[in-house]
Image 1 (spheres, rainbow, N blue to C red):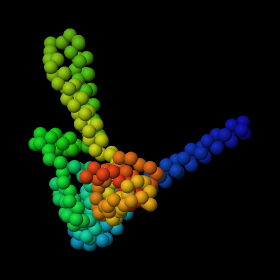
Image 2: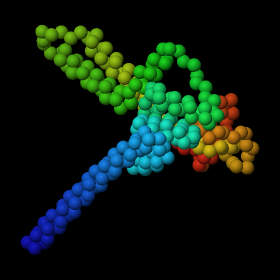
Image 3: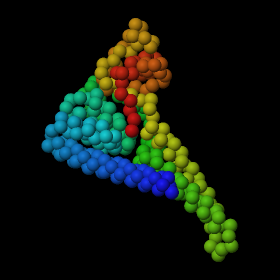
Image 4: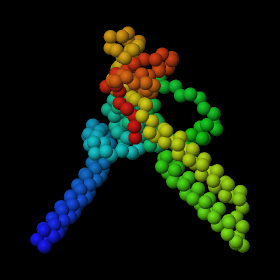
Amino acid sequence: MKRMQSSSSNTRTTGKQSSYKQVLVFLCMVLVLKVSAQDAAFAYQMVQQGNYRAAVEDYQKLISVDAKGHKLYHNLAASYLKLARPDSAILYAVKALRWSPNEETTKTILAEAREMAGIVHVELPQSNLMKSFWYIINSLQSRVWFWISVFLLLIAVLLLKFAQRPSHVRIKSSYILALIATGFILLLFTWVRHQHDYNTDEFIVMKPTKAFRSADENSDSIKTLKSGEKVTKSDQIGPWIKTILDDGTPVWLRQNDLIQIKL
């Protein structure tokens, strides 16, 4: 009997400790969210007052607690641009465009930062049809496209089941097929947008960096990349990243000189 009472007492104690831990975690989360909201409001106020250095410090505090999003990165890029730091402005403008690729104001900040850094950026020409295609895909995030497609496919399945039952209401098969086709097209949109959002092969050069012929500092240096240039990884060996220059020349860069672009 004593053993049973002792076991029951230990169970209650463990349960109380677990409850205390859950309450403590909840309070910590509330505190972090409250502090983050205060920092965001203060940083925005600093931007409005033209105190961009203080704004950058507070936005970086938000990033340190894993805050992210288009507005945060956009304001940070704008602040860095005002501070004449084009490399950081380019980095956060590109990160902001990962969230909202159609945002024209962010594109303007990116263009101005590249001009300040002396970077000539040439985009490949696209037809109006392709521009419209990408505009539609970029209008929503991948998870939104996914849930819309799931909803349409679910409706199609329900209609198929309903159509098999005797009913005075006839459902045209063309409607069901249209729903299924649209659902799969939106799944394609989901995949394309996901590839854009979670591409981990793009980097920003954060200081003038030598491009080497091979993954060795003793090899020949082909050219020096400007701070703020964007490169795409094609291969990696240890701390060395391989990329292809605009003229088709393969070069190797030190990863420590780059910052990865990610959501």
